[in-house]
Length: 339
Image 1 (cartoon, rainbow, N blue to C red):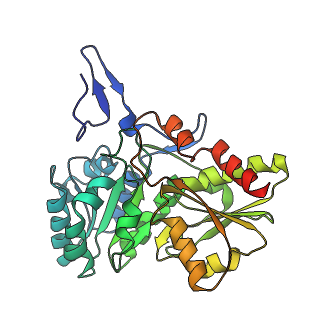
Image 2: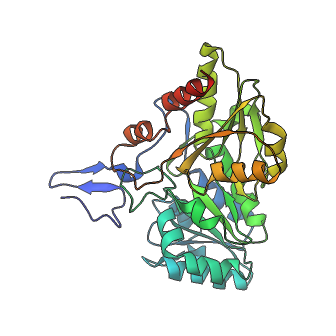
Image 3: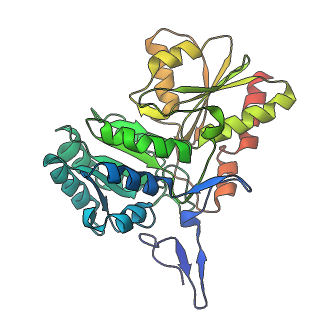
């Protein structure tokens, strides 16, 4: 019999054995290099240098990699149970007395359920609280109750909030200390478990609020964020066989957006494609489009994003193919636009 949809812990229970479910399925490609729990280990290392770092969880420490911090610093970890609003309120109180909280839960609960607490308890007073949201976008097969496909749209309008959507383990490890050092509230779209390691091959350094040109190309510019940057890099390499030269601009910080870099790279002589693990409404595509429109740039952009609908449940590879996030679908979109 399956466990309930709210707190499964990532397992399906049967009369005979436990088997891993779609809840915490990995999106890593077969044979891809991965790093285990990069967020948990990065936070633990940071806490060894900064005694004011504390961690909070809403009954999901193991499934947001906060358990690594909990085990290393049990006296600085707070378990709030199934109460996301209370967790963010407690994090605000801890920040008020000079501590630097990292509060972790699933993205759907941090954004849909606890938005008012994030807004008025944390963002309005400008507190240094770092909200860590697991299972962002289409990174779980559990359906609309757990797929945070609209979290960026919900949070982009919140004044003073920094939003980071990391590509891989390298991004996460470098982003954690940067977020702790940021003066106001932050939201991190967490990739958890065995996270692919990609950006170390591109001489990459995370810089809050800045983009990174990972690849140059004359025909197409891919502007990507989150896990879609690793898909963009793979698609760009494979498109060489079709004699298509693709540049990749990684956007790890959604807010504040590096508008100057986007305007510099998005020129009318190249096809501009945005790629994001988020609904086409209110995320990277619309951020880039508004950036270009407000500057008077007439560049057309093609979005690769999730549709404006509630998504199906199922296996992640099947869902990514169905909703256009797979490498073959990205290549097909580019070739169709160039034909």
